Amino acid sequence: MDTTGHVISMLIFGYVLGSIPFAKLFTMRAGVDLFEIGTGNPGAANVFRKVDKRIGAAVFLADGLKGAIPVLFAWAMGAPQDLWFIAGWAAVTGHWYPVFNKFRGGAGLASGAGVVVALMPLAGLVGLILGMLVIAKLKSSGHGALTGLIVIVVAAALINAEWPLGAEWSAMASAVALALILFARAAARGWKPGRKD
View (cartoon, rainbow, N blue to C red):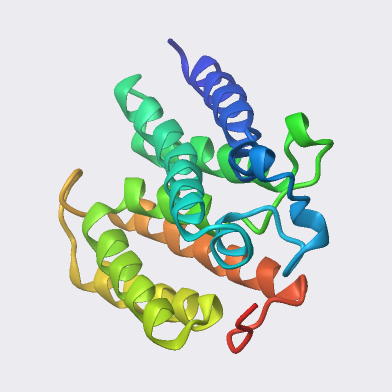
């Protein structure tokens, strides 16, 4: 498949997968409207705190996978490495503006984490684990996300290995840029490092 075909396939697959509203699907039985409770965000953190911790964990995993799978799909298709992040961006965009949920989506932090881990596994996993430990300790997803972002940037600078052990600089730059944009977007929506709800 030529480059154009790769890009179109990745955009479509990533966006459609990213559009699946797992938070809404997993909470349907509870009769909860995520837009009306907690932060009003249809994402894992809101489900975890306001609905059920087990369901919240499942949503986080599902949203993370819908960010990671398109990147791995692009890799499996043999797409050039500098195009892998396009699939991830498409998935996050689908989460932000899901066609299956009237274009009302979440902040995309879990999906973005999945993209970062797929692009740069070691640095991404280290940042994700430490970020989650901070969330468990401080009960603040903002502090956890900020910690994870800092750790990812530092770890990525220290790890300069080929896939799947690390990331080349192009993948690192894409992953870090995505993390920064996710953080800025979340902050713009009123989600701040010290916020606990």
